[in-house]
Length: 95
Ligand SMILES: [Zn+2]
Image 1 (cartoon, rainbow, N blue to C red):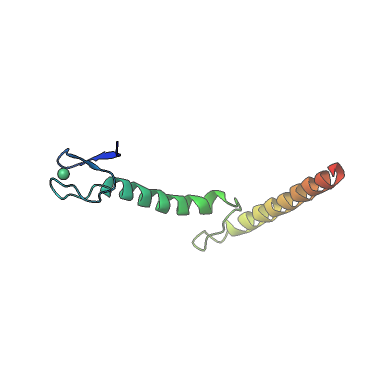
Image 2: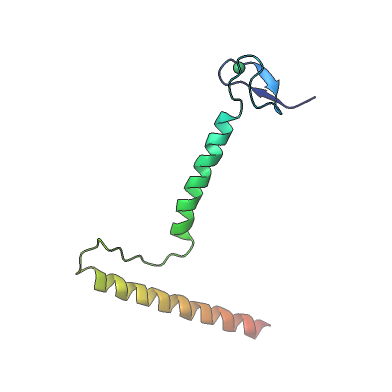
């Protein structure tokens, strides 16, 4: 039996390979497409935030905040570098 997809506007069951409802001509995969697009857009913005969690110094931040953020970022990057070095040496020691 072929895959069936239910029309969202009239409730008629159509073959899933169809793009439009045979009964009312409404687009059958509209919901699915919309959700996939939303996930794509969401994924993009999310990807930037957790991919590499370095402190961002935005231009609109007040001048007295920036030195602290730059210092914090320097410490963070140093920490990541040291952590990376330790991970590397541990890996080499194990090999
Ligand atoms: Zn329909």
